[in-house]
Length: 307
Ligand SMILES: NC(=O)c1ccc[n+]([C@@H]2O[C@H](COP(=O)([O-])OP(=O)(O)OC[C@H]3O[C@@H](n4cnc5c(N)ncnc54)[C@H](OP(=O)(O)O)[C@@H]3O)[C@@H](O)[C@H]2O)c1
Image (tube, rainbow, N blue to C red):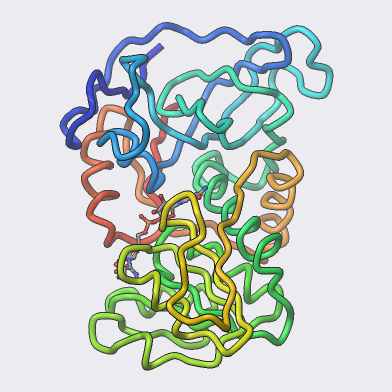
């Protein structure tokens, strides 16, 4: 099969496109012919070596995909050849920047017919992360106000729509050029983080969801009312320490479950959460896609059209 991979950690130019050994479905797995795979913030961090160094090289990154089952491993009874499926790779597996992937059947879900492969791939990891963060971890309720940092990004664009669907009021931060976009997702209030100090401009929130990290982390605590709670997905494996003591800091544990994927599918089919704006690439353009993702100022999702 063809795949995009790297042979050593490095810059975007480390991404290569070429031949790679075909995977095989082990017991409990399905083999999927990938039609689309998406780029996530984690992919370039993996390529750079920001996480644990990878020794099993060459390495195919990529955490989510959509495609068609082409073989089933022993013991798989709930999926069959020809089923359209989408999903998020198991923690520590990756390998979605490829024409084929072998993956545990229990963590993929059927793709709704009305959703394109590109949209399903784009929604998978961002949807899973937003659902676990906003619903399972922050337990956001109707009538509450949530601050979501970086509303134009992948996870945040899903979270803004999800929070509106729950019935919350949404305040988000974005650069000026993305204000119309985040308003189109449903944001009630948008703060230009380049023009104002978000920590001073926003206050009284019940919840905050930080998808940016770095110096934005303390911003998420600052906007909370006393007793508020904040969740962080870009500040390391542990919940960051707040500078104030009257708020809670939470680190969502983003596991892999079919039920979350089915919720993503249902929210997409009902129109409650629309797919983000998508820019398409071929796998051979992986280096360029990583350059844009690493720049961190695009909006929506970058998606590989594999077939
Ligand atoms: N399991 C997990 O824990 C998990 C899962 C998924 C993602 N993540 C992490 O979550 C983070 C977000 O991922 P993603 O793929 O959604 O990100 P992304 O799409 O790469 O985010 C890019 C967006 O960030 C915005 N941005 C950059 N700096 C900002 C700032 N100072 N204030 C406000 N917005 C800012 C940009 O908007 P503007 O152009 O408007 O500046 C841009 O639209 C990444 O660090 C990723 O590794 C963790």
